[in-house]
Image 1 (cartoon, rainbow over the protein chains, first blue to last red):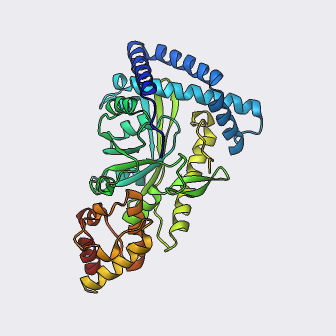
Image 2: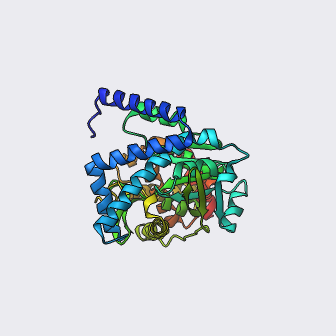
Image 3: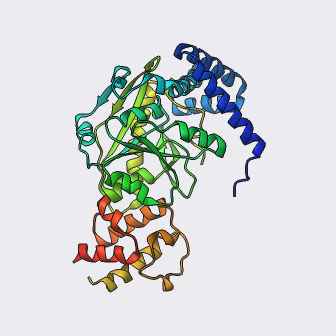
Length: 298
Length: 81
């Protein structure tokens, strides 16, 4: 059982998060981005553990074999994370229901768009920690209501703060490891998008080893099982940051798999197909991926 | 297949699929599925196994109507009739 976090730590983190939000709120978008870059650079310089993880992951994924190039990508990835954090916080000031398409290019496969435009058709949307996943989900909810499956933060105070700030438009959240399966299935029944991330390490009892950049990575099984059980189409989607608060949202063609009776093989086949889609997106813009996560922890 | 036969078979599938120990002999057909103590992933595992055992497919709306083990057995009974 996990040791409870010290209350003082939770309070200090909460105060830090409140202050950061207040600073970002008070700045213009370009100024907020400059601050985010400075903080990201400091984090990269001082956060030895995360920096090492990121560089090691980039080398392991084969993005480059040159450690100096890997370090440069890792640094850019930290900056990217700073930018998207700042942009997510500022997004409420920039995007409205009528102007969001001015800053978000849509590259949605026609078959997927047809599913999005069919009111009673639920879709399982799968993505990774690439581009600006949260902003993309919020804006995609203008096309079709979207429920994101999210992990609660370890700090309950910070979690409440973030949960309060995140939901916008027709975007809502549901906790990962929810004991009520009806919340997930109900989303699909209501014809909404159920969005899940597949690139976080899954504990042994919840995951299955699936190849990611040629190495087995314990991957959450829920997206694959939900597809096999409900028959709701699967769609891989991601966003790419093009510049200051400018993005492209890519939603690929829907995928459909049939059960063979071998649950493990079926699940692995789906997850590895989705992992390959994510790998392709990452290879095109490796600096936009969150590398500082122990993805290959077994 | 009548409901009693489906229930018996369902109990067998649940016993095999479940990763936790339940008192299967005393499992009441009117037990709400939620009360079995499965989390969402365990229920998805179970539904996959039920689909394979009974050769049926589920629509999200079918699953939303199921509240108890008996509801599930009756649904499967109709589908396999």
